[in-house]
Amino acid sequence: MKPIALQPQLADRVYDAILDAICDGQLEAGQRVTQEELAAGLNVSRQPVIQALMLLKRQGFLEEAGRRGLRVVPLDAAAISHVYEVRGALDGLAARAAAERSAERARIEGPALIDAGRTIAETGSVAERTAQDLAFHRFLYALSGNPLIEDAISTHMQHSRRIMGSVLRAQSRARDVWDEHDAILEAVIAGDGDRAEALARAHTARAAEELIAALKQGGQTDAA
Image 1 (cartoon, rainbow, N blue to C red):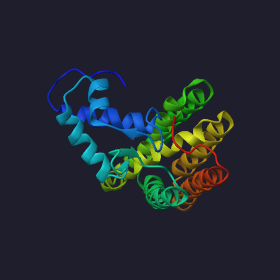
Image 2: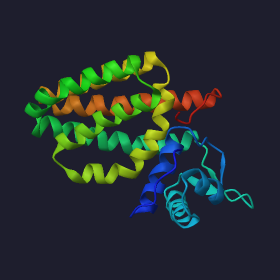
Image 3: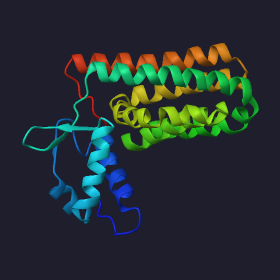
């Protein structure tokens, strides 16, 4: 994490920096975090760090670690399943609505997003792959025409961002993800709401299954 200059809304910027560190794997699952170390690393006072840590704890990214303070919440199969159940329902809704309302915009804007995703899958870092993956899903939410979908998924999306890195570490899987995105986009462009929803739900279900299987086999499940 890089030091942050003191500016208005500092607590928000500290929150974003710590959340990025959790999602990108700089702060690993189970790792203890302290106000003092974070404040020193970010070059800020303890007060905005305390505010950020309280919010991250409420959102389920941090938990009490006895007298040791707080630690990054370890991922488990139940947590992954819960996040992706919500994602599947909302992504399916978004894909259906996108097909019914925004097929033409999808045709015009979508292919460039797919092309960029395929390029990043080959040459980008895990953080870049994750960011591009999220960009595709946010594009679907925008196409849906329903702003409540992204509002409803905003916090869950940050948990997904943390989890996604596990899938996207493997280049072969990163390529497969964009094949699945392309299929969803094609259904949206075709105006086929049923197919778009089914593909979006299958996409999230497959990711959840792979992550849970990796966890059970002792694989790493926090994003890097």
